[in-house]
Image (tube, rainbow, N blue to C red; front, side):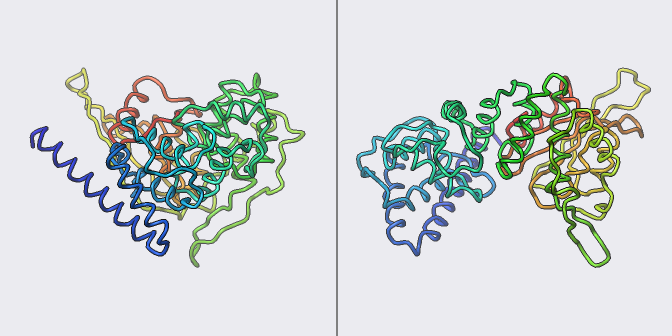
Length: 404
């Protein structure tokens, strides 16, 4: 197939996806006559004044541009300016969403990253849209009903966040920087799922204060494993496969506290926990994700030696996670519950020469964000060199964002 033919086919396919998303939007709004009418009106002006808003790729079955129009329509009674007066924009679809929301709803200008609330589809999406409107009408962001308390300093850092950051990610980053965390501590925390999971905020703040106070004594590569360990023993309900089916067990130490601990005592507890990983969860398995594996072969410089095969493959059982964690001396075995619940996807980069397999990197993909959020080698070493380049190549092919 020629490049031009492939391009035409791609354009037709995207148009079909967009038309399907619009059809579903009308169906979703069908019971709300006013919102359906507003959606029809906004769609008309977007097509004529900001067509790029509809050109965005569909992600996990959602068209972000159409999703934004649906949600802006549902807030129709809060509109302060008529859609007909919106001038539109030829900029990117994110800029178009922000511009349209600014025109329809905002009394005061707000940072562009906040407008991601209008195409958000997670459980807290409506709450985030409420924050956005309240702040745009004059309320300080820190005064809103946030999942974690925010100081004036944190609010200032938050409101200067980069345009591409998810709102939860920006809140967590502002919290850490506001508490005085170093860039290394911030990056380490934001490489875990706590970049966007803001639950149990009061407890986790005690952990951040501990990490900041002991930053010189903690290898940043150990912060992610520490978080995994603390989350697992305090909050995670272990899933166990039995002859009677899947059962859940209560967290091991739901009252665990960081107070009075030392870095060495935490590391010792973490090592003990690592040795116990996999007990009781050996029967779990889950269906593969839509992402595709990668296999590359490199001829050996020695003609008599076997070629080297590099492979990125998905791990789809607790047994595979346990094997991976044992091979690389890290805690990926604790991710079985998260994978079983669809909250994480774990992939393994390894190479084979002859019959011998060498584990190189363990990769965590956040399916909701379509992002690579962790990539760890032996004893949690960060990815670098050729393994990192291969991971980047695979991520680009699968249209995953690198968030490490």
